[in-house]
Image (cartoon, rainbow, N blue to C red; front, side):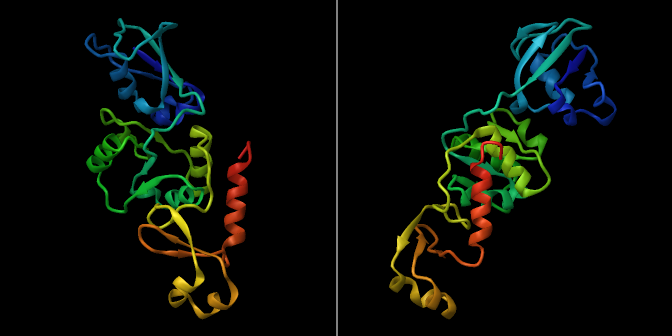
Length: 232
């Protein structure tokens, strides 16, 4: 039994199988194609379709000994779940970037795998992770995030889901919405230099954190411009 993958999914196979983009598995008459693909190392979230011996097939189909299963990559862009995104503990920097762009990106620095999987299902969120095992859990809707650097990870997520952006409308700390606030209402919470220099402020509707266009504004503007470019 052979499972073949496209070039963009070859990294999911064991190193010895990557050049051929194919993994041979022991024949199991009871195994569905979905089970075979998982055994090859490809999470269900990364499968856009299957072919068995050259013909389209569903994940519940079974292959005869010597069969060849071709995995198709997910077509991009694909719709995200209606509840927004949920990121695992290793993607905190990506969560902050998504929030800067106005996207609903839930994140916790101590959530376990079972909690993440349950929350993604209960809140209808797309689970973003670099942990293949997490995406192997039954019923999880998610995506395996590519890239080692947060900027590369952001480019991958934006390319895969093409979400509508609303920059600088969410709190980067908790993800809730921001609302404009009068300077007088927050003056006692501002550093002296900020009170003298800035007049426009917004405040998080959940945690109360105050925002203004400070020293990092230029860097944030560059992030937004890159995110809005068609070619990222």
